[in-house]
Length: 314
Ligand code: SF4
Ligand code: MG
Image (cartoon, rainbow, N blue to C red; front, side, top):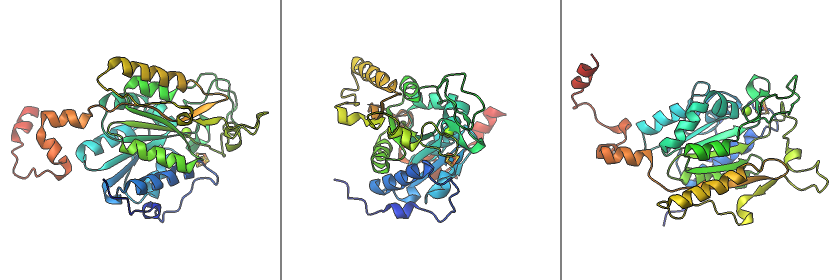
């Protein structure tokens, strides 16, 4: 049995000044990530957090771990490179909905079919917060936030459905303002072997005045019931129990797909789908056992003759 973690969330905090707007849902995600890393006992020197551009892109600055703040939409290729170079690291990619589902959409799709072992957390607030609140790819048609001159004339995408179709082997949705359950969800995603997506519904009080804390809490509804509900409390089972059974995989994906379209008066959070199957690291290790033994970053190339490679490229 694994030893209980002795790390605390405090050990993952940094002294860097945080300039997110007061009340931003990003704080909930950051705190949940600190808690998840402490809970799992992954030390800072074994953790690498990659980010794209956007308010969420500042996350690595606020986590005591290795950090890599890359170009707009390029967080997935950067995290992929990081994991391939050093598979001994716990790699976590973070970014906004505009960064991941808009500008980086091609990378988002192709990460799913590789099934490399890392976690991708998307801060989904329906707007491009850093550039003053334009509609992002998840804002639904007909909605108009206070930052938009007109209502959205094109529809939003369904990230959970896209992830299922792309081949992600762990697909989940969290809510930024329920920090404790989000921390547990992130811990589960990080522990999963394979590419995990956690789409986190995140409030942006500065630009999105529609999907607010009060709206998620259902304060505008006659019954005052929260719009958020937890999948697992309704007996939902996301796990493929026999990964060799194609029919079960399809059935579990179909079940998750139906749930992913509940996005109005009731919004499910939790794990939608889990499949334990071979990862890209497994495939690479099978072809080259050296890869499994020593991460590329630690391999000794000093005695290796690389001239044939240069000859080939000449
Ligand atoms: Fe958060 Fe929105 Fe402010 Fe960005 S603009 S820090 S997402 S509240
Ligand atoms: Mg956004």
